[in-house]
Image 1 (cartoon, helix red, strand yellow):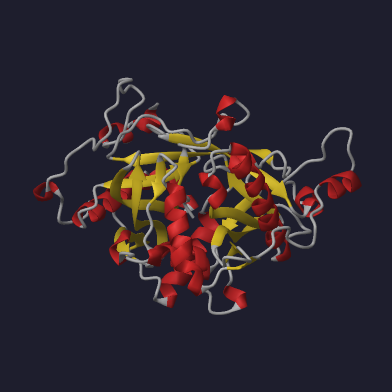
Image 2: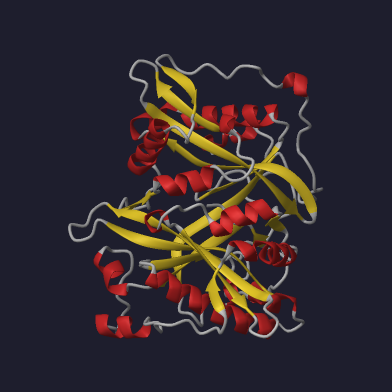
Length: 414
């Protein structure tokens, strides 16, 4: 419990909180109480504001994350975010340069830590909030015992308060006070043999390699008529469809049209920079957009395998379907099965080795039929300076809440 010492001083729900929770801010922030200057760092270190439009800063962030960011529990895999992905994730519409925070060694100027915040509008049980979405907290391995994490969080908090933003959303694989929702990861193998070679997956009892490859084979072509890549002209109807769909969730993004364009269309200037794929389904008769699905691909470094340097991991992004407004749960379930099958086909054709999805959104409706398997990891969702009763993250998948089609989490953190 010693690790919670810092969090007990912060405006976050505590594990000892009363069962009766009233939705709203935990602490009212007075502008005159916001420090004008950051907290002093340990001797030999200094604060920095990172500018990803500066190629040298972008290069520093890339290498810090590539060498020191999240690894799995067995230290076999580590995220390898491309520079283009970092700009996509750190620079959505309305991004604030001052929320890209770093710590440097004073003498060498080496970047040794960073944290990122981006602005967003979310809804929490129909209440609209302006928040910062906090991510990419990374500290050089050699400095992990210097307690820089609380200092980074406090400095990010100060900078957000200065912009008049008093709430935040963040996720972590670590249990902290106090998750508003908890989700589990599910994985769908696309290149089973490679995943087996690198230790990402194992051979089930009473099976063999050929049987697993055959079991997980996909068709070469999509199944839905009228499915095609998203275009700029599709953004207005896709924005409208997504906003309607997200209203079904207790914790959800409330995006502008420009944000939908950014998060779904991306900013790639060439095929080499492509990180994001979005497909719409167009009704052949009415020309209306009835569905869309999106995913992005991140490379994971393989740290202990002489045969493979990396694997490519597709992550399910936002999606929506008109079938979600049907009175029949079966209509949505059937439509999502086809839509997600096609997402798997497209992800594989674009080089992905595995497709990941959380138990959030309506993902539980297609996991079994599309042969997703539960992973080891969990992701906890947190609200800073805001409290609300617990929200389902689908972590109890395979229990009665599997029938859920309303409520839950409809929010993606890239």
